[in-house]
Length: 404
Ligand code: NAP
Ligand code: MG
Image 1: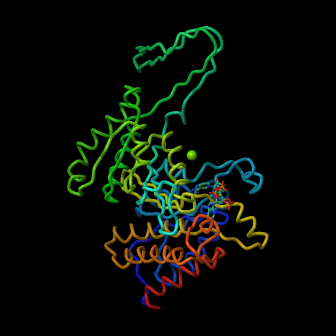
Image 2: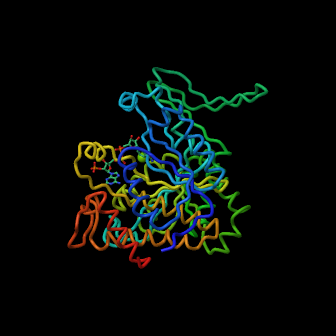
Image 3: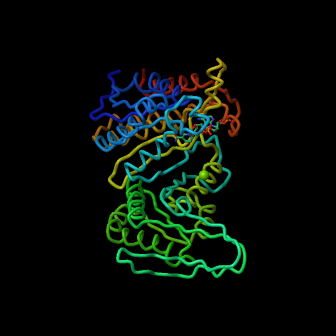
């Protein structure tokens, strides 16, 4: 076979622990034999992040801005235990947070659906993609415990020193208080990322808040979405025959459960935090969730939604066999390769991405799967494979597609 050529490099971000092991296997078995793989490599493994004072993460984000498409392996977000384990100079920030801040992006998470694993919600036939706004609200709030009697007020002092006041509550006894904010600019970026991704994937976009109760705060989210839709996306949506649909959050939940799936659900920060875990669990497994960061300027970064699978890695280090599911990481690569192919008008590359996904799903549907999936699957004659053999089974099917 003549290897498939690439025009532009992908920004490749390597990572940590078990997913770093899978990353190398995927490249060896599923990519390099078929593609003349062109990447610009950034090692976001924790050791190298520490060595470069985390500058490598910033360089990777800048490279995504330069080339447009990146693919990322799961990485460790350091905590106190990791600082000790890796003898870190500092508790470096989450690479995902750093990249997201630099690209001003929104994360879209979607489950990979297969015939042999049925979602808990019987009506769900197509993926539900969750978009979570990642700025402000309760995640950047200030809080107070109130003791005794007293008046709580909301005060805004503008740059000329003029005050605007609202009484929050006249406390007669102990209580609690919180102040939170958001920024029009951030909501606008979020809205544009969502509309862009809906156009890109030709899916309806749903958005919901509690604007009937929160008449200024949530209503601003609703108004910003509507205004951007009307001014910038309405015509495009009509051409593609897709819909922007706004409703109240509680109505949205009821509709989501009764739906067949196949749309993007844009969520405010807290709703997205909670609902993404609910949707992931109801579809089956975190190991089957893909994730893509989309910036309002049209940059894309693909990854698996799960972490570095630390428990499996420690088994691996002890020489024990692991059965770690590589599907979401494989789909991160196929997503990035497809997007690269589309941007470069490289049909062979787009077709390869489709074939890689096809071979992966075929492997599972024919009964070869990792332990996590075997526990969920309802088909007979399952062969539970180890991490490496699962990828080799996919390679056999991918070679068959290319008649090798
Ligand atoms: P995790 O890596 O997502 O794994 C949690 C558990 O979920 C695993 O122990 C395993 O369950 C199951 N699991 C997840 N992915 C799997 C896969 N591909 N195949 C089979 N089972 C899978 O979360 P964590 O162990 O809490 O976090 C480990 C590290 O990942 C942390 O340092 C965290 O900072 C990092 N993290 C990174 C990202 C990212 O880069 N996007 C996201 C989340 C977490 P069993 O043990 O029951 O088999
Ligand atoms: Mg959560």
